[in-house]
Structures are given as structure tokens and as C-alpha cells.
Figure 1 (cartoon, one colour):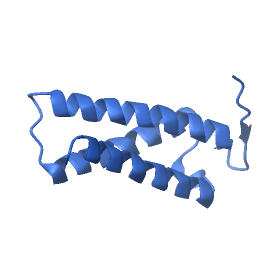
Figure 2 (figure 1 turned 120 degrees about the vertical axis):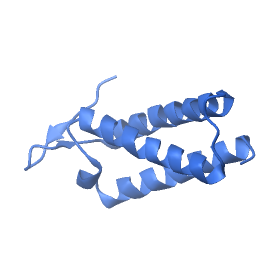
Figure 3 (figure 1 turned 90 degrees about the vertical axis):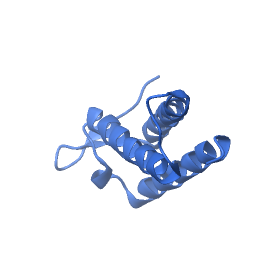
Length: 102
């Protein structure tokens, strides 16, 4: 798989739609696994609000780390890509909460 990246005027990487999609798919798998591990762990005892906040925060942190690994960040994405990320995040977290009946 070849992803074409180019540098913009302030030396940030310009990400393609395919790269963003790959990042989001990886992130979906990562957060889904995290939710499963958290729910099955006796070490974590969270109510609905705490779990939602934890997963939202982890999503944002992991997204930021993945974007930084591509020499980019959320502030350098076009608004349609930001909207896509927000929608995908919301759908993922709703699906996780529904799966675990939270």
C-alpha cells in the first residue's frame, strides 16, 4: 500500500482521504479492544459517565498520536475531514455503549 503525503507551507504533512480512513479504521479497532478489555477487567469499575469520558479521551489522545506520527495534527485537517472524524467517533462510541448495554 502506498500513501502519498506532501508537505504544506508550514512543514505539516497533508494527509490523503485514504490515510485518514486507515487511521480511523485502526483507531476504531484500538478503541473497541480497549472498551472490551476495560469492561472485562476487574481492575476497572466505572459508571456510564466515567466510561464514556475515558473512551472519548482515549480516542482523542490516540488520534492525536497517530496524526503526529504522520507529521500532522487535527488543526491542520480540512473541516470535512474533521467532521468525518467527529461522526465516526460518535458512531463508534454509540456502538460500544450499545454493545455493552451502557
